[in-house]
Amino acid sequence: MRRLLWLGLSVVLVWGALGWWRQRPLHPPPGVLAPAAPEQVDLDDGAVLQRGDTTLRTRAHFALTARVLSREDYRFDGGAALAPMDLALGWGRMSDSAVLSAIAIRQSDRFYYWHVDAFPIPRREIETSSANMHLIPADDGVRRAMDRVRPGELVHLEGFLVDASRPDGWRWRTSLSREDTGNGACELVYVETLAPVAP
Image 1 (cartoon, rainbow, N blue to C red):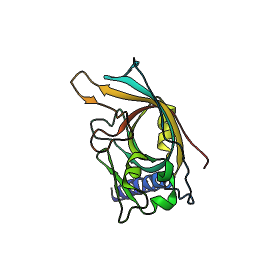
Image 2: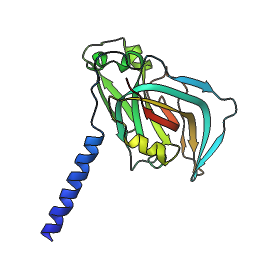
Image 3: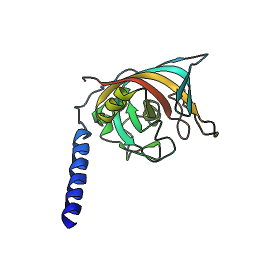
Image 4: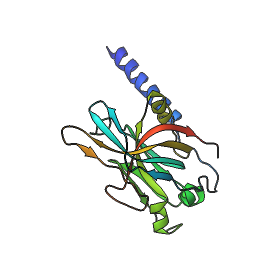
């Protein structure tokens, strides 16, 4: 019995170490990696997509190339089955290692938090050149690509900003602006393509 416990513990440790190794952060040299802001085309009459008992209404076509500032995986909250991962993404000077070295970044409870001792760039630029995005994979291939994402990596993603709802009254709305902050400012993205980009 003791042997089985040790074997089980060893398997868990190896699995955890392998997961960390695959998702270990990258540390690119200083310089703006993603100069362009996200591209968004609002839709007057969005399409309706069904994911199990969840209805998704597309609000805008959305595409961006951005640096991954942080990632957080979710398994147990109410949205985990739909959007299993959040990425905090940065563009413009929020994709520059020289700037990011002065900013502490973390994610928790579907929010993205940052802290500085002294501002390396104006506060408003931090707020409008980064965002926390809840990612809904369109298929298994996108889900596998999401699993391989590493902090510090440059990625390109395309898809739709969507609102989600269920028959029991549960709703999850996307932000349609990069100018907002706080509760409701995150993007809910139905991701059709996601791939790393060479810096």
